[in-house]
Length: 267
Image (tube, rainbow, N blue to C red):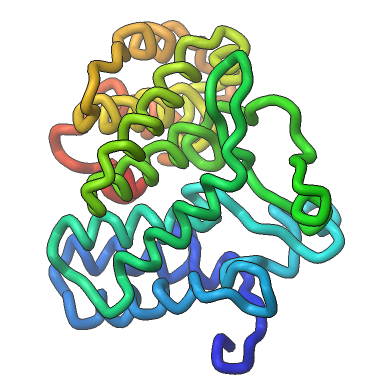
């Protein structure tokens, strides 16, 4: 596909269904030869295709809504380019590298820098960018998106913090950490979380916050997030599942000492 200069579906490269998810598993099992094949692919994924990022998708960010004209650049940790960014950063920190590794991290970070926005609530990044956004140089959003692991600041901030660590870029680390600290003290953003799940609820925020705070160059108080999670009322129909259900909610309370959250690309 890349040789033919065609654009990818995000399921090709994302964490949930794609090669980034395979790379996460290979990193944990220690199959570094196959992992380097995945990393080589992710480096190539960052090369532009016809003036747009190589990860630019021809379809829309959600399967149940029409695609925006010209497709989109997805930024979520679950389905977007910050998943590959986090894996590239973690493997660089591990010392498992391929040609162009650091340069690919830098390309993704520079793209995210272009779309970072500053408001009274602090810095934030959009879940995705459309061709119309690109043509206008302005976002279709005027406020930060939902404070979720899958698409929001918790995942995007963690990926960039890891990138800063991998590159020795303390300025990026500090900028990202300040942005995250600002968003978790904003009542409006906290109020966007209405369930306890990992994917887009308080469990995902709490788990990402623990990892970000543990590596932060300046202290980030996250105790209120644990209380928020504990006091978020489970729905009567809360499923038993991992990403959206009670299992993930209980793991968030248990903490991260076992490293279970590696599957979320947080460590």
